[in-house]
Length: 123
Image 1 (tube, helix red, strand yellow):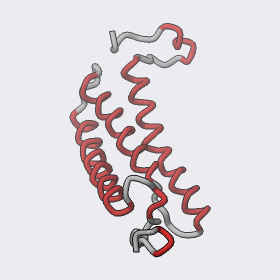
Image 2: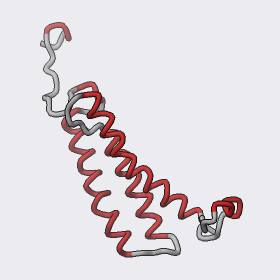
Image 3: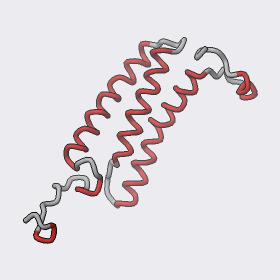
Image 4: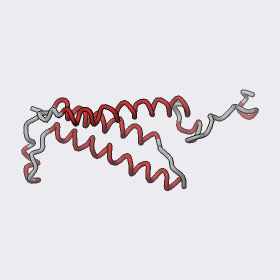
């Protein structure tokens, strides 16, 4: 069923299946993360990798990985191509959360988490 053509998309001239839609979406997410990084860096005036970059990396990698694993394509090159970025993005997200905490406002990129002061009542 997931490998059968989506008939109503036949006007595109492409043979589109549900698995291909998952693969296309994953590829768009994985590629679109660079636009997110570009916008964040432009706003900050310095290189910045926002957390959304890692979420898009993970989701995009897993979606394209699932396409290459479960679709009729079953391409080992595609699997290898998406396994490493998925692992790397998960690890980088874990480091980012560990460094800045779960909430983004606790510390910026490259900064130490804030120390509680007398105004916080935790001196």
